[in-house]
Amino acid sequence: MNKSTRFELSFKNIIQLENKLNFCKLNNIKNINIPCKGLIKKELFNSTINHISKNFQEFNVTYHYSLYHQYSKNKKKSYQDFLDFTKNSYTNRNYEILLVSGSNKKKNFDSIDALGYLKKEENLKIKLGIAYNPYLKKYYKISSERERFERKFSTGLINSIWFQYGTDIRVLQNELTYLKNVAKDEKLNLFGSLFIPSNQFISRFKFRPWKEVYISEKFLYALDKFFDFTIDLVSFYKNNNITPVIESDFSSSEKLDSVYRFLENER
Image 1 (cartoon, rainbow, N blue to C red):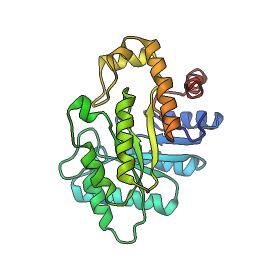
Image 2 (image 1 turned 45 degrees about the horizontal axis):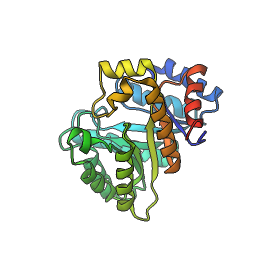
Image 3 (image 1 turned 135 degrees about the vertical axis):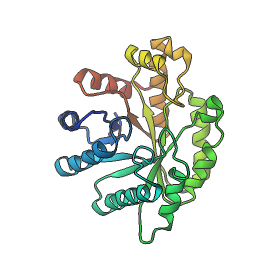
Image 4 (image 1 turned 90 degrees about the vertical axis):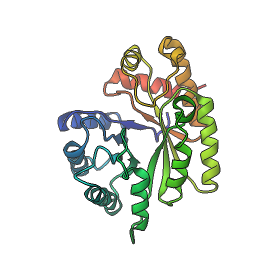
């Protein structure tokens, strides 16, 4: 298994968070991601940061900072909150940041705007991660992702790219080639979302598909084909130095074993 593999935690309150963190400790999982969506925003998001910083300093944490979910009162106040958050990460060295606009971008305050403001700050040495969805142009007719990436990358503040999940490896390969051409000789840390297929996962996705997440119909109706694809995706990640980010629930021995089987069963 890739020792740098990251695990995203999902929880509804601090008690659930603590239970999952203790499970991670028990299973020697050190690299965790904390999303900023659903219930995990504002008060719970901030409480999570304080709780982990105080009680679980052994973890290597990446926090997803959603400008949409953390928006407060107005653009000025929201930017100041974000600036304080980035300064704290640099001062304390206790977490890294994945900046996302959020599911519904705020007008005149998305990740491009925030990065533009950050670039103007004096004496702020910070590097951030950004999300990238390779599937938008082909499957959702949204052609702005490359332009948005170039604008973000041009700020000089980016050191990692986090790929959205999808099931078309050819498209992913094309976009990876493009990103490397833009970055040229600059080193970028690459991360890729990974879900472990199951009947439950398929049922939930078919009932309520996630916005701008492409999963082929052939995988939604044939679990064995979904298994095969996942093995191929793990191999693609390994061959291209992309660190997997496990977004499926892994908080039981049985589920964690299933994750490890896929990570070890590459082609």
